[in-house]
Image (cartoon, rainbow, N blue to C red; front, top):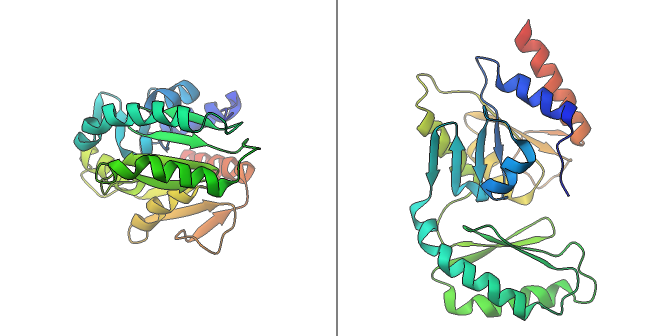
Length: 222
């Protein structure tokens, strides 16, 4: 049920139009889904945990992820049958990945859900793998790739003449992959305090995130 209020969207758009700034969204959502939520042309979209990127006229999909799309679609259909009695579970086919959302699950224990998914994936262990987020289980191509590598990929694609300062804010388990790659040459900001994070800094909630972005916008205007 994520939304981007118009005033917050205006703030992000203003930042994206500054000549010294590139704004990007790094997400586990599909490219189609994040575009529907944001609808800003002048920003970078790193979707499906880094497997798909769009930045203006630049676009990229991980080649090995393309090859597993058909298999993932079939697995998604099988999951709907296997988990049909798990009330409140939502299965989302994102073409390059499949997400099983269980935030609203009521009649099954989480352990049973995970065991059912693992059993279904056993014949496809070479092609597919599982990862866990906030109330979501992700099925992805079994390749060494994540949000952090997606960020590194877009930096190469944009061909900067000087290395940019990368600032990343995130609150999910999968965002730790970005915090990890930014330890040497960037700034990681965890949204919500956590002792188990690779980020160096934190903000307490989304409200503070937008206060931070406002301050950044003001400093860039001075």
